[in-house]
Length: 228
Image (cartoon, rainbow, N blue to C red; front, side, top):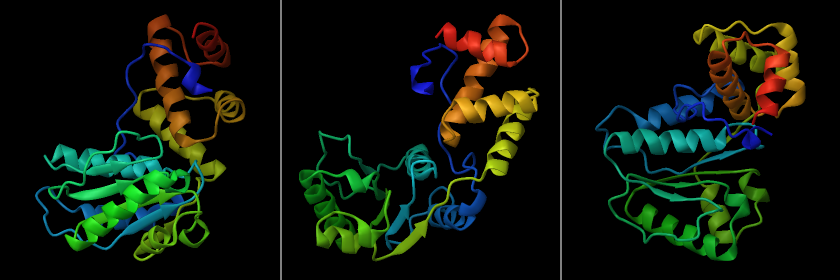
């Protein structure tokens, strides 16, 4: 797993709407770009948006991209995911509320999410959320599940094999790297097919190749893993 490769090759690129490879999810990406608008936009729609799909669809990428974009504009946002234990009080100055991995919320987190949702709706602040299941199938309290499904809902799909290969090749070429079909096959069969992990692998391979002054080959990838 790529998480086990602890090589000091620099940080991966920060999630953004621009570096999200939409594939079959172009409608969801267009919706989020329209919602975000241009810097200084204070008239964003307060209607909730919910993204759902499996872990390889980029749901978290999109929410993190929105958070980064808004914070880059000087705005603050409310953020809640299943790993958050120290939850801040609702802040009326938030530009929006972002809720990730809602399918995994504990009872206490569901209560917080519901309260945030009520405050946000009262103040015409948008809630954008993501989970692994469609709203009707979420094992959550009824009032929260209803609100999550009460706005725009997008079912995200993972990239197909050909699309993953095209994205990897395009990203490699942008770095001045030529990925052989053999290396591409190795990446797609030996590592997670999640695009985020594949892009992290590409970053690590690029850094290791530069450090060792070697071309990217299967032996280089194996040596990189042995030295991790």
